[in-house]
Length: 318
Length: 298
Image (cartoon, rainbow over all chains, first blue to last red):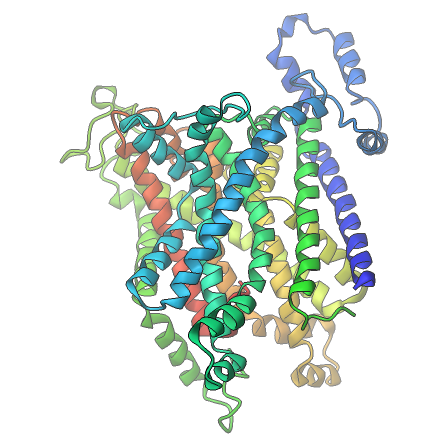
């Protein structure tokens, strides 16, 4: 197990290095110049070639690509992720302002969708063929098919503009005004959780049904165990193991979803910063954002792989 | 081609091809929701091909005197802010959806399957390098990866298809690699090798056709996924140039007038949902029909 963890850690580090290389060189080799976009946003008549060269120097864009990469990586180890060309602010400061917002939104969605998704999948599997199963299954099938931005817009229309129950946009820190913050988050969290919830319940349902057909379940029934014991101890325990993998996938989807949802609901989180920075080709911000997302997902997958072996003793590590 | 050689291991002899094909069709059509999905997909294809004949009006012709009409007999879904007929724009939007879905999936399948084939067949260094690249690609949410790539490539429908395709390719590579690893152990590969078949020939003639079942399921489900990502990208504003009509951008345009004209944003979203739903259901059905063992894997 220890050798496996070490080997898996080395793999994770290699993947992270690959991510930095992919991101850095893709952003620079593909067409587009962040400085030109910055300049055209300013008063063009005031920019002389000397000033342009000076700006280029200020952001380190006049160095060779390899040097820029080395600068970036060594900066990260010193907690310095560079400077945003568009915001004229350090990327670390920008991220520190926005990550807690996305974390608040994402964590709530993660918890709600995991809990309700597993519950719905369980109920559907245990009462297979019932009306409840049909409702859960069809809702889940529609849930994974509905585009999240559209779902958000429809909720804004129905609950915000038509019924006037909830505020339609914005974000408030829960430490400033808890009630207002919660009211503002109801719609974005619901939309963000909807897809994951549908996905998880589908997965749980099919896993449970698969486990229910295994030989050891037949044995458990045959030796006269009570339904409660068979369901809880035999089916549930084994049926939930693959759900751990789903949790890893879910993180990626929640981050991807927050990119869209933060734009729909005008929430000043990391997702909206990323979209704005992609459009203004603000290299440093996009690079840092993608790296943070990458680290989070790689770390999550690492945890999933480790816990998998712990949960299922049949898995042996070579 | 034998779809699932292990399924009939108890019966003696290999079942004839026709029976296998009939079994697949029977299992596929057994569920009503799959039939429904097939009908929707057929309708989408027909609409996309015959859009100029089916659309009641020119989707680009502006008519400011008839702007923002509510749905009525002449304009079944009303008109937008520039007086363009919504139903006609929806009809042409079907073309964009289908084209992006098809092309992005084609890019994803060809890039991903090549990577998976090479990694699984050769093993060793190729396997290690390709697997780590796949891990790195999979560390990004697909929507973020496609957004960054399509903006960097310069926007436009072609670049969106490439970007979404690359974003989706990692899952093909991974599934393909696993499939190749198991197919490689079959005796017929050994037999081909003893006949001095080249690596390329073994990969293309023996392994590729036999890895078809999991791939066709992934392709079908990803058609819906690609359409959904394209819609999200065009919502964010990366989509096709303004006069063109994509379902995602129709939702964005309609959002501005949602209080007075909710159908403008409602209908294109319903269309996206219906199409994605259909591809998902047909994909599920194909998975059950082609290989029930794939349940939970894809």
